[in-house]
Image 1 (tube, rainbow, N blue to C red):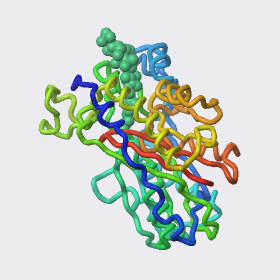
Image 2: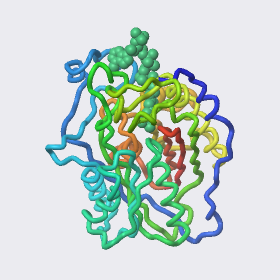
Image 3: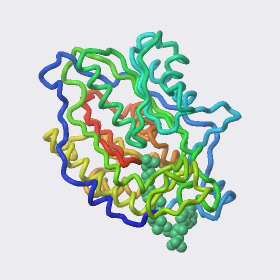
Length: 357
Ligand code: ACO
């Protein structure tokens, strides 16, 4: 892997945060009206991984905070589209809608079942949405946050009423569960989460601030090579790496810690509020130590910055909506709360979405 960890410095540069463009110019607000999630049946504990590779429960728990994760099984028909559909059915029901009310389906995924058809088309058809628009967006772990921002502005602009936004990934397709792949194998799990966003006449509801960024110069730190041509300078080609996640863990770790802090600061500044004014930080779950660093930096109590990585691992684009669905169903997200969604991931990409719910 490339050894330079300099990406953190490049990617945490100051950059303008976009305010919602429709502020003052739209009569519509946007509500998060329902949520749902789905995880594969098969649970893998750290002890299970000890049987597959040279690792220990202690190493994984101390370095990452992960204890278990769920992995798909082909035999059980657990495709990306199937998991996304299950999460969507729950979200649509939770919103009190029927699938025919949905007029756009947006899926965040970097592991579609095939290059085409898109996951969103398969979900739309499986739900029976009556020909809703459907598109997939690939921004790796940042995908769901990107899609929330895109969907919000499409509704607020007046073109759509009810948009289903899904994060779904089967990243363990690209994980080598042997000692050779142990540095990444222990981190990941599969799943899907969904929300329904609805137009409302209450224009105080919706985005307060949002941001989407990328830096392709950091692509070399986290990639899945499809052929020899995909290996960046400095990374030796090896046939057995083809199709599997390659990661410079320490470079990504530094990038993540710096980016999370900068992103929270910038988003709060754009909204004109302080860290404790936000009721819930719903963050990408990539490592408990990265989350803990952000929590300490902003002096947040554990009940504001949510962690479920211990049970699911890093589920890529599903990570943020899995957390949100969990706290929403537990009744912790209430009318009038401010919720900040945050993620970073391969690309490199990163983004935030701060909501008045
Ligand atoms: N079990 C036991 N030992 C291991 C394992 C394992 N599973 N994996 C690596 N090791 C060993 C290494 O070989 C190394 O041994 P050595 O010192 O003899 O060479 C030692 O453990 C230390 O490895 P480090 O890489 O220094 O461990 P670190 O403390 O950095 O933790 C980790 C590694 C957990 C991967 C950390 O770097 C990390 O979390 N990075 C960020 C990951 C991340 O956020 N990824 C985002 C993905 S987002 C997306 O879009 C997909």
